[in-house]
Image 1 (cartoon, rainbow, N blue to C red):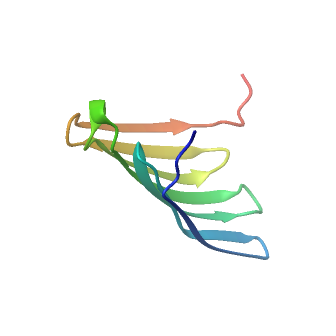
Image 2: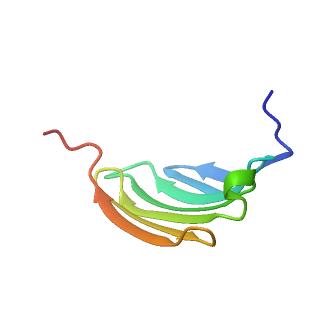
Length: 99
């Protein structure tokens, strides 16, 4: 079985804009919080922030912070791992680009 201790959402959508002020998830394995803003027009600009804490035994205490900004066609990502493993990862992706 999947155990979810808490799942909370505060969001608003109107016109071309979707704002997720907070999406919270608390499970025995992980705790996470997401916020995002998306405009559903033009090149779909997006800004998102995800913060997570691992609670599972092997990686307990590991933290992840991920931010994304740009558009659906050209997205910049920044990730930071802290506590047990430390790393900074930066990248750009173009998920709609055909090869």
